[in-house]
Length: 215
Image (cartoon, rainbow, N blue to C red):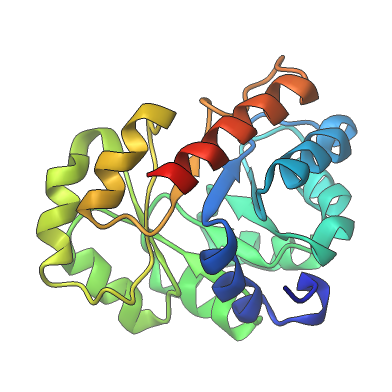
């Protein structure tokens, strides 16, 4: 595998889809713990790291994680507008994940050479996001949609479109989602939450990586 730092964001994205398509959602992380948590995630096999913008000092955290870019694709979640996209880019992030679909956000990220994964819940949103230039889709909230909903959407979406269920994903649910057509997952509080030590996060990460490989 090539080092991510030598690849474009889109090339990193495609490599991550082949290598380990699990996005670590580090909501609430602080800058001082980023390197320890990030290193543990990488050692466990994660290559996609997301700092939601409603975390404390998220741009500082992204800047702390950016030097790990030789092994990871680092970026932000809960991105709501084009200014935030530009701020993440300036901090060294190359991945944008949104809870919604906003065509201006998608186009801004694409113009900056970033990978953007907007949130969708319906086929209408999914096709609009892809037309705007999205390189993947965040199926959100997964607790509401469930595997049956993804299976129905897969009947009209190309198999080549990466779809990531996000929301309430745990280790024991992964097999059912993959059978329904999930390309990967965004994993939040089941993996990281404030107060959890880097060792605990790494242990959880190992469990998710093992579940993905077994599913």
